[in-house]
Length: 575
Image (cartoon, rainbow, N blue to C red; front, side, top):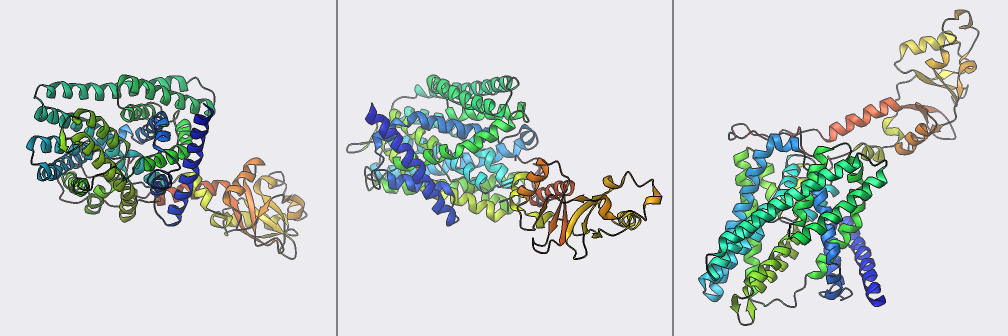
């Protein structure tokens, strides 16, 4: 028992620390971090140094299901009903275009490859149908990780989010069709109807149960007092949903996607804090999950001739995704740059595909392809190898797509702007410097000639000594006999807080909030104390809002003369 606990803790430490190191190296190389996680897993697993063994990985199967549940929850939370109400037709067109085209091309290519190897029509047809269905799936985890990492926002990003959230369901439906075809050509046709019925029940059950969990989460969140309790609730419900899904034979990712989708649309404001907390806490979960994916992939058990099947699968899948998205985008009237790059953003493949291949191996374990090799084993080997390739190039292709279309860095929040700015970025230089010896009559004239309601007060050497505002003058405005006897120095407030231009805006605002100040004076340096600007909290908020709108500003993306479908705009893209 002690040895087992030691092994589990060691895998946790090696996986997270190794993944962080690999992700950090990839970040320095401007490569998506998920690639580093997988490479770290390859090095730590049996393909590399053998520090993490296959039996250790098997112990983490419950964790993998939990990680898939977290991924599904966050992906579902990206989908807003208002977007689907307006553009559901386009998303469905794109989904069917890329999914069915990939199914046909991969199915045909792998059919020809298998038939040329063993000249058995039924085996080749069974393998092609199953592999074509599995190829339709896109890994939501690594794809969404890149979109989140590069803060992408726009038509391309919204389309990728919608497709990766939905095409696992399409892949599952196609998989039911593929396994039915495989069963009919390798045994009898009687199994096709029952397989399709089982897939329909699994899809419907996953969606219904996941939606019920979303409604349950909303009902409980209404009664919870704080963010910590709401975050704990979300984690607990994800674990419970995954447990019930596995026990019922339902699709874990689809179920938690439905949970996130229902929760974020039924209670968008109430769910914001717990979902943001889940997003922040997901980093070590993602890291360990993808490291374990890399550990599971190794080349030692793969026959050499199966590389032909792998190459046929990989290249046909790339062609299917790219061509299908281009055709679907043409029907929807997408801008040419978006429809050209959408397909390469959907190349990643992961746990769903491997899971379907393992399930298929049970159906096809009795179908021989070669000596001591069944069709089920061939499918698992082909999908596992192609998954490694897809996971290595897929995230990089997502990054390339969003950069080419210009959607990276646009999904910014208020906190992102504040973190990137200093006092110099928001200070106003349009102010009047008032001498402490200046009579109040002259001070009032300065206030009438400038928009600001606060001014720095300086001494003879132009050093900051105080601050003067209209609020401070309100008691003597009506007493004109004092205007020529009192000076600015008599009414001003001594400056307790001033900043240099390089001070981070986050620190400036934090100090102003702590002491309930509205303004801060910016000085040239601490030696001269010469005022060079004013930071006004209200003006800062306006500047932040303008910057968010500027970075999110929509680009013209529709094309004149496109088909009858409404062209995409960027008014309601999920963010």
